[in-house]
Length: 131
Ligand SMILES: [Zn+2]
Image 1: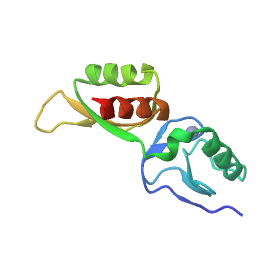
Image 2: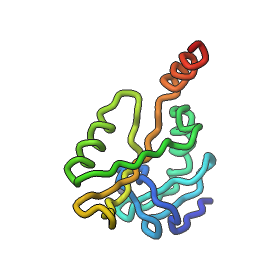
Image 3: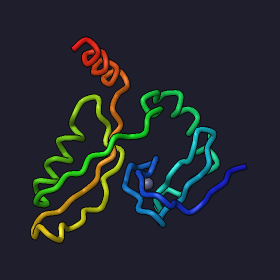
Image 4: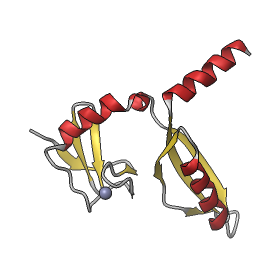
């Protein structure tokens, strides 16, 4: 028995990682939460099982993803997003549609959600604790 509803929040398709805007795609209830799919990858009954396996493999998904906003020319923003995608131990989960800065002609902003490796976070927290 699966429950599938219209997606109300933007996020990355779990099949292809394409950004799915609110109102598009579907959300399917899995034991560990909701599985978001873009219109090209409709949810299947297997998603509930896959969701459970994914949760077991990805312990770093216990925290909600970090968010960053990049602002600049379209080329600058593209370069920053690509650099973040190449960063080790950081996984880009979704990139919003670019939006124009009304007060800053020629500049755009995007919001990026990224999950950071739990081991890296633990190492940073240890360093901060010892000064
Ligand atoms: Zn997809």
